Image 1: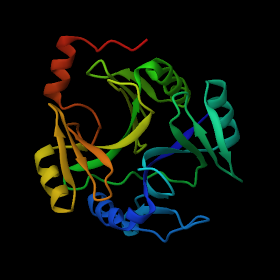
Image 2: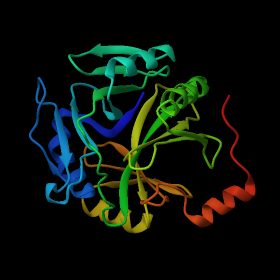
Image 3: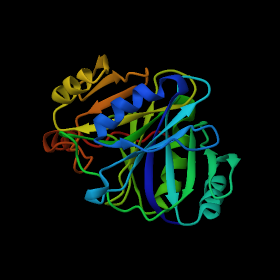
Length: 265
């Protein structure tokens, strides 16, 4: 099984999508494609075609709820990938002509779509890069969710690693793929959800830039800041290397001295 590309999907209420697209195209230095789909609900954030980069972020106008985020995994064999997800405890929500909507054991939606030849990762934009979808998982489902994503993705050459804190688990793609997966164990029982993370060389500078574009501040943590985009969607600015996605050297050395965070069982 081969995952050839990954898209981070921004899901937002339909009435707020236009304003949010202004924000996210600015943040990612892209332009919005024409809307498509049966209800005109899908749009791709396109990098400058003259530079030869491929898109890795899309947006969907959702008909109900507050939205969030999800993954689209571009694969060479959609039926084979769907079969693998089912064997590991996933479920099928909807099957289309050449793609499928799936559900993880905790209820997180994601899609298997055909690979269209994407291969060139977009560059860092003003010291930051949208490079991670964080799956927010209730405690009762966390162990099963880590096992599901780890087994599904390591079969395609990804690496499954404990995070620097015990409530996190990382599943990293092979070099060249643009989006990785972080699983976060929530402190309370509530439905699974997902949000976007950006790796930032300077969280403070990126926060100021985003606020000038219409984002609002929600909370600060030692190594990340939570913001709300103009459509009301939560996302995080994280203190990771935007080129590699990894922790800065000083934090990596500190984590190594302290030892790895325990895996959730």
